[in-house]
Image (cartoon, rainbow, N blue to C red; front, top):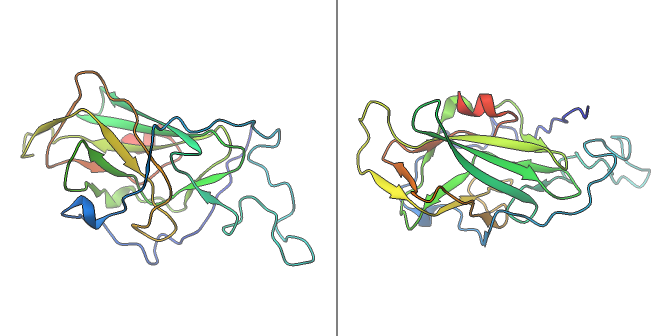
Length: 210
């Protein structure tokens, strides 16, 4: 079994805004779009493990693929993204991002969601912020939970989303991490309201939905 490596950049307690809710989509990253399927490539037989020691070579170059300077951002070009409504918790959806590339990548901060032509961006759930960045070895998956609407009916402005765009952040909050993904939604769409919010990226689905 491959042991998941832990990356600790960028520090989640430094330079990261807390629960910032944007009023318009224009205020946030606007990456190019991708279908979410990614471009699968041959997986390394040593997936998830560094090919060199953590100290790098004598020239000062660090060959550890999990070193901060070597980790690419996960995005629509090197991953496959799915969006699946779940029965529990009520009114929730699970985003799953799988690394389809041959190198590790990092899921930074939280996904930036947009249904159709929605002009506001869901806020992140602060309590879901992990202690370390979620990194994916080739073939591994990361997760985010999406609260679509308030279970108690307190949400307003309900609508049905039929097209979802998932944006990925770069090393700096709100910077573009590369191409977005557009995972398929159920044919009937998904209902959402003003309570729409999202978790930070997690290493397991259970945590994402809790």
